[in-house]
Length: 159
Image 1 (tube, rainbow, N blue to C red):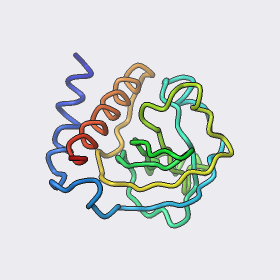
Image 2: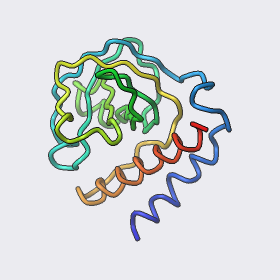
Image 3: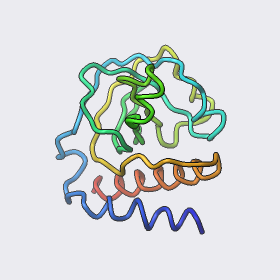
Image 4: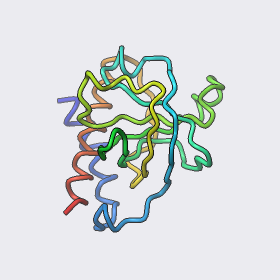
């Protein structure tokens, strides 16, 4: 029920604001090339079940929040949920400055360790602003809703 409520409150309004443009025609909000995946705190992967490729792309100029995009890695293109840290995180965790977290949707678990790998990609649309969370369970639910929203956006805009 909480998952559905999160979807209704946070995700569907954001999806309704996106233009009816296909992924292949839409100009990306941000493009990164040949970004090397670095090791992070391992919170998203080990505690939240949502492994991310942490990169520090040159010229990152996006507002804090969750985005949908696509990533090229290992000869394939993957749908992606992407996150730019909040101002709170930036103030309290200096290593977050310039950090961009990328979750490759439907990447098999055995391929999820991307440390040292090089990825490229496009940020296609904004999904939502950062939302504080108080429990690990609440964050897991939020991530599930975000991944679902990204899948919906990709499906809606890939036709």
